[in-house]
Image 1: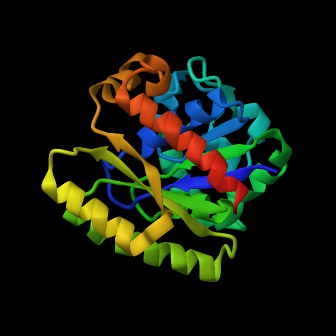
Image 2: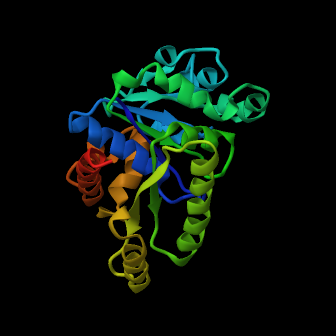
Length: 256
């Protein structure tokens, strides 16, 4: 049975896509059958996985509106080895079309159910807004991974996201829970980041992952080569952090 996780944060630029792509590659290297679902119309996770979004014949858009099954739309990441349900600009129009469809919040969940035995992990990269696309991701998932920077405004956004997850849990998906918070772009030289990190550990306890992803140039360079950072330079500190995070995820799933 696949474990489905949303990587979500309503704040933009916090490393959701970087986390999704690198976690997928690291899980694949650890022997886990992994699918990455790109729910962002920008298609950054698709391109970061080495898949050209401009040459797609089918994408997650066709899957959501019922024009194609998942097995016709998924492709293998040439650099990461995991499967990708890719996205491109077509997905921007799905917001309007989904409104008129039955089970509009559960279209992704329904599409994934038929392939439950094909994967150990399904990771969903959500757009930085509470839209019907994000709602589809949250309704399909067993849990939410929240990447966040240790800054004051990130704490403000976190409370909004937690409230959103509670509402979805109460009304649409009783399985949904917060799996954990991942500290990303962490700079140990900044006192504020250390203080916020300590606050997170105090308030959320074991929900805060032990792995901490540092601010790392090699991770930022990797997407321009169409490769996950853990493949582009596996010896970089950022890549090592995501490998440790993948190992922690595999252990944490056993206790869910």
